[in-house]
Length: 409
Image 1: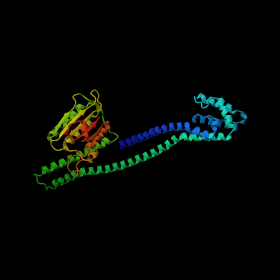
Image 2: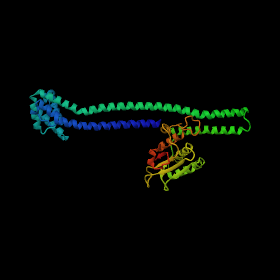
Image 3: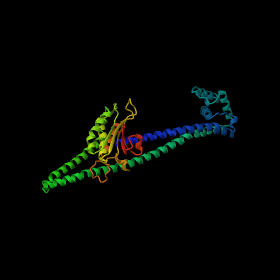
Image 4: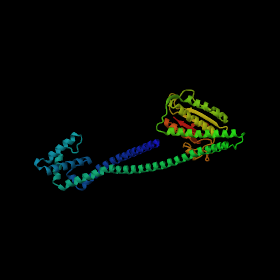
């Protein structure tokens, strides 16, 4: 659950950042185009239409905003502070100096500004129109930001709604999976418990012949071991998924670890009539990992190859690294020549209690091994995946192999 929450937060952050930078890039480009068109066509056209080009020279939006600012400041001072007797030229000179100190000058000189203000004062309506033009140009120049903000808001709202729908669908899916898991646990425990109870009652009632009693007791022990196996794996699965559990990483030789796992499974491989091809570099490849948990993953993959394939299956275990000096792009392969895993089982194989036996009565496995292996790999920061033909060819393991489990470190 914690991983799902972190994944959702990471997905949301990634979505917001991608949308923000996309809108920012688009707005920046549109702004440059808008400013260029405004300076080149809009402002000159407006001034020519109303013949303001006879009395005022504007070289762009910046110059227009300075003139509007100066006109408004002059009008406010002369309208509300007549006792100061400040001339428009003085106001303009002050404002020009103030703007010049900030490295920004819209008009060439105070004298030209004074002449412009004097000419405009003879046409009061022109002042109002120029101010309105300034507001119009400001709106036009702000349009990219306004539209960008609206598009960003709408896009984010839609994206969040989509993520919420996906989260709700994932929640429903997790809930169904949880109910299915409980059902599978009950099934895996009920079947052997029923057998144990029936055999124990028969023995207790004395209806089992003496020559059959060892067989009944043997069956009770086998079913009890089956229940212990299910309970132990379930406890391990819950323990790995609990927040208090942490893996203990140490520096270890991966090649030596894989060799030990192969040696541990060698007797089972021989008993099943299978072959094993071990392809591990002679040199050491050191990684940081929990040796017990990682050994568990590798051993489980080899054991699955033994259990779920016909007699005579060829199994290959190999370790590769793209770098001879460092442990970079290290992969562990556990391949076999058995049958491919059909769809949709190949997409669900890493989920809890998923097995290839729909009846769940064969006793070949609990369906928790790969789920545990996946969780252990995730806790290490590794990935575990299933690859089958034709994608299998890119690993160059051999044409005889049908599928491979790959641990990427």
